[in-house]
Image (cartoon, rainbow, N blue to C red):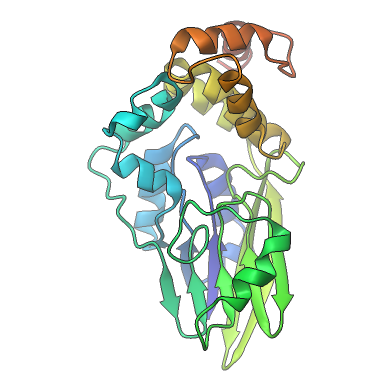
Length: 278
């Protein structure tokens, strides 16, 4: 059996479509998505509809977990406006997927088993492998948008990398893994392909995503186009250094001070992009 293993699509529908169009994906009998199917990117509903139509096994990532609690007081600030926009796009779409999925010697999760918010780095993977339940030899996880394939003491950990928001320094690329099983043998093959970044840019504008959360949408698109590692976190920390993250005025102040790659205000950035693409 061949399985397409993907992670962290983050509402990037052009990236998902590009992966599904590959002969490697077409040869797979099923899809397992390791959570964070949605949020950040502009087409969460399209992503969910496509995966549902393909009967994909979907796990709950930290972004689905937050969306399930979108009305909690801690998510009321301006820093969560993109999350609230995403929630409106997903009216009627189930998001309460399982946190873990176990199958024989394989365990699939988002962050670490039972902990979708737990982000680990590559050097921490061997310790996680040693904590796996007896009989589990393969751990598949996402959350950290940087891919890895780590073997340690007879066990293997695989992070396909973020399909929609890859942070390995190469922008406009979508990674995925094909797992092939034959008897007791499990073979993993990693792939990475380009996708239509112009379609992605247009979607940010035409869906209203950029208008709803201009600064956050900009740094997300920047990450998708450049692959810069943890660019979103860097920006959030910069804004937090200026004041309350929940205050829109603080974000406006930060917009004028942040070292954007394009030396433009966010309003100018989206205006120029709209004139270029539409």
